[in-house]
Length: 301
Ligand SMILES: *[C@@H]1O[C@H](CO)[C@@H](O)[C@H](O)[C@H]1NC(C)=O
Ligand SMILES: *[C@@H]1O[C@H](CO)[C@@H](O)[C@H](O)[C@H]1NC(C)=O
Ligand SMILES: *[C@@H]1O[C@H](CO)[C@@H](O)[C@H](O)[C@H]1NC(C)=O
Ligand SMILES: *[C@@H]1O[C@H](CO)[C@@H](O)[C@H](O)[C@H]1NC(C)=O
Image (cartoon, rainbow, N blue to C red; front, side, top):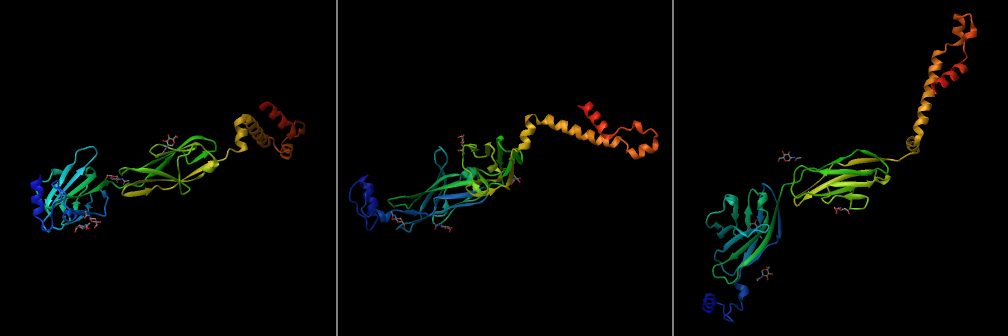
């Protein structure tokens, strides 16, 4: 170990080792320093993604660049290794003709697939440099969301109704996150206006007049956001008429309707006294209207 360190340091004009255990006093100057402004790249399926880095080193030699990807709970997989921009060896089938490495170490991935998502690590070393520079960039890959739409049980509802639901759905788009707007304001979970765990369903446990409003839902993911066409929910007040109708008032209504019908019937069938008088010389048989009305009324009751 000692001799190897010494050899390595001896290759450098300004290097000298302070201890046999690998630390060079001026080590910082020899390492490759990888920098990037980017921590996360949000990619779209079918498009391309640039995992942009650059490096600095005191050496002008070509660097050895190695990109690896780590996906959920799987061992890191080498994506590509190159000397400068020249790729070494064969690429894995899933990366063939989709990959480019730039002079500055950046990786360009074409025709993104959902399976490309993961954390990418780049290691850049220059043959005789002491330290290897490395950097991590997270790549997400998504399908843009399509416009969501609302389905509700009815467009109008009576006050105090229970368990009224509104559903938000969308056709396309990965990792959707739903939210709801009432009168343009974002709804939060509340004891009366309940949001399902995935926020797709809005349930009104007991409808109040204040729920008469315009509702919309939004769906978003790392690359896109869409809002549904707003829908109007009309809430009707439980009026006094409704209470009468629902508490035996129906019987009263039927009676009234019958009476009205009979009134008009009686008026129609009883001929006018003038014409009757002309046809018949016996005015004695002509019932006056009052008598016929009370008679028919009684029989119908
Ligand atoms: C790497 O570069 C950054 C920015 O230029 C600088 O702040 C940092 O000190 C450098 N690190 C090393 C080890 O040289
Ligand atoms: C690296 O090079 C590529 C291609 O020239 C460029 O698009 C990218 O911005 C560079 N990255 C940095 C961090 O300079
Ligand atoms: C959803 O994706 C399918 C297949 O890519 C496409 O045919 C359809 O038009 C998309 N639907 C919407 C609402 O964008
Ligand atoms: C809203 O609250 C209900 C009941 O407290 C709960 O079951 C539901 O998961 C909550 N929804 C959200 C989006 O937190």
